[in-house]
Image (cartoon, rainbow, N blue to C red; front, side):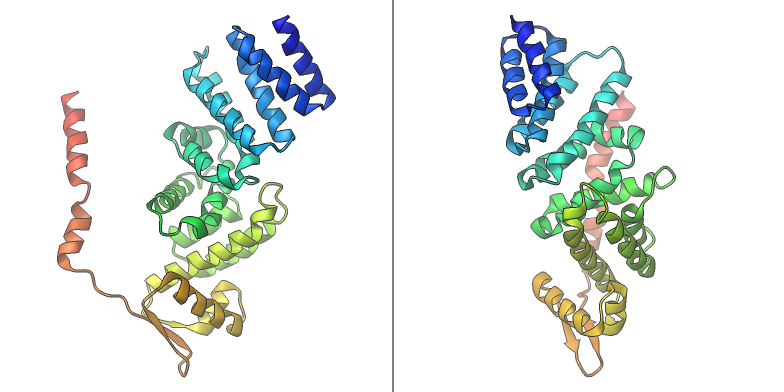
Length: 300
């Protein structure tokens, strides 16, 4: 009778009755002791919750599938890699449709096992990973987690450039690896066109462009003492009037130490010099931890 629940849930799924399928597969999972069928039922329930756009329940199922992948004894590492690859792809549905899923799913994707899976099995996911991090800038721009995620994305995009590239990853590489602002601006235009035709990213296209312009502005301001407003507007793809409003809002929102010289048409940046002591602290930070790791490695 328990197996009949599984078969009936599978039948309802095949008929497109996803809410009924999710309920039947849940009941089967509670009653069954067949681990293989329980694993299949969990995948089926995840698919049913995604297809009924029940994102809160879908996130619970993502966690259950993840736990199953990590604890289940697979016949080979390849099978585990394949399951992780499937989970990464299925996780794109809640990632770009449910705001509350953004942080837990980014934590999942940035976990070492899943980063390795992306690099090994599905490097095209870098487009979505980069887009998710960049569009999350407004919510967490002062967060250390956001800065770490951005650094990780830059590192992975640089490593995988030989394997995969698209306008989104090319934008990241141009801005943070090559520091080529003209190329970054060109790739941003291509990325916007790409996003507007992408199933997952079409709704995030405007947010991506806005956040990307902020990143270009911040990077440009960090390495220049005096910035021509017309020049920066051109790099952002804006006309001079829109560019001036953009820069005023940027200075206000980020509280950058800068002032606008309207007569010269420039922005004057005040970059306070960091003390020698602070530079020494920054350069030696983490040295003790690295020494411990080396000692442990040598001891082994």
